Length: 303
Ligand SMILES: Cc1ncc(C[n+]2csc(CCOP(=O)(O)OP(=O)(O)O)c2C)c(N)n1
Ligand code: SF4
Ligand SMILES: [Mg+2]
Image (cartoon, rainbow, N blue to C red; front, side, top):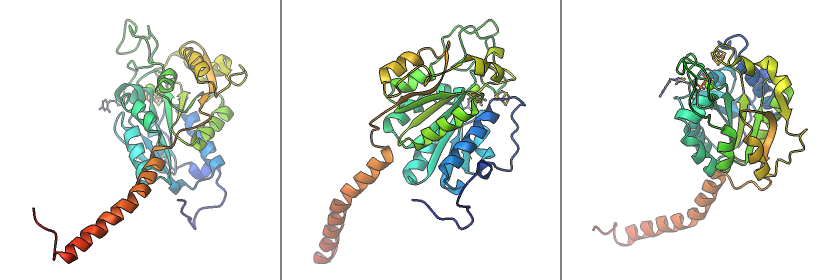
């Protein structure tokens, strides 16, 4: 349901989604580019800010809702998705965005991702994947590469990273994309497409941490390293090929849409509404029966 707001302009520009709060991210953090891409995507979609709910976990990246004019909820570490799903179920007319870091999404919150995917609520989940725990000052994250030397792995990580792209594809996500802030135009379009997709949409953004991240992953190298899936002739309807390409997560920086389900399954909230409609008849009949029972017998029989 869309609510008309007399104060809202008819056409929104990117600045209508920017709040007065000044980001406290380190100068050069990739998350500045992410929030700018989100402003642009939201302006292209044109929903008034009061119809948008932006939910995050905890981390540098999870500060992002506060920098927008949408309703925001900076929740608990790893819990953006359960709360975003609850909001979408209660208010299906809202545009719901969930966002957070690689640690938030794939360590502490990792158990929520498969269940959000299989329920398929119509929301967009944006992960700012910097391969590090930024807020807590540079520990290993689930996506840190093997060998990464961090404050919690001084001799180098002995673990293989989680592959977020393959992870969500394996659980059946219907929209899976990866972008970089260095390609602002591509990133804004990708986020817009994810929001417009009818169902759970996942966007992994390689958003570098300039303070604790690997120098090789920084913004200045992204333009050189990125390879657009569209230029590789990838057909986003081909899920198996998407999974093959996703395997290159740690080596090749593919950007664009890996997978877009050509026949998206029903959303969770649409199924709830359908169930409610189906049950409306029997529930009304039951209420009527209970009422007539009450009048005929002078009240419900005890026991
Ligand atoms: C339950 C709980 N465990 C641990 C923390 C500490 N903590 C806060 S943010 C964070 C990791 C942040 O990393 P990431 O999600 O990748 O976000 P980034 O800061 O890199 O954007 C951790 C471990 C916490 N706040 N709550
Ligand atoms: S610590 Fe890293 S992720 Fe956090 S604001 Fe600074 S550059 Fe960004
Ligand atoms: Mg991180």
